[in-house]
Length: 299
Image (cartoon, rainbow, N blue to C red):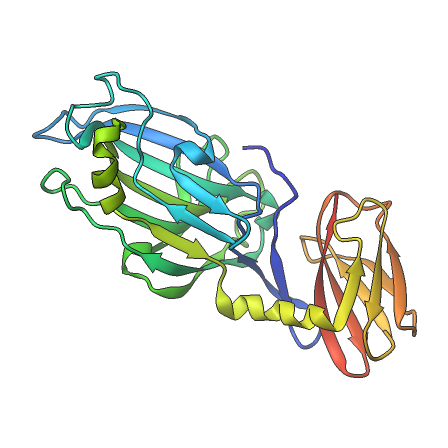
């Protein structure tokens, strides 16, 4: 669960130029991690005993990321192993799979933030599953203790009953020491037989597709007034205004700290990133037309 700074985060600034809160919009390009908890089927089909939990690859969860459409397709798990430990010979497997796709970002400690997305398609159904077993699919924010043995706080939305945009909010101002903060998606249900003879039945179970929050994504329209090159960068960004001269550029890091303040009074400004750490930065660009917020990426 190493942190990768190639995470596309969106920060909103208030009209005064201060961070009101951190807003994280779903991005298929983010460095998603995966974790699977495996439990035997509950009675009467099994004993319900927890088996193990371990890191899993995103494709194995199964979560299909598409950077072209900026979506993730969340589907029932289908373990690619014919061993009787996993399979029963029927459509349903022997295990309950608790698949977690997440971003861990401990820089969110001590802040109030949101995780936002949009359910763009929901064709998920339980046809053919064991009686009493339903799929549970949620978006979540979770605050874990230092060794992940306990969830200290969480916010959850049921994606099965959600259509369109959703927003989760976490006040993590009290968590500013060694807690672990994650946000993402959880899909719980029985594993489905991997035999090709069940392909049609598996497809009929459907899926849930999640994309970016359409309301938040409109913030990026402001970037059409400017050209940023290169972005991402390793050394510097050049911001060019299409219309009015740029009066000032204030650059903020993930924690909302002002790291640079430039007053070019020109249609072009060069911002050095040589002394900055890898990650996402937000540039508040002021002209006589008002303020715009641009997302800059340091590789």
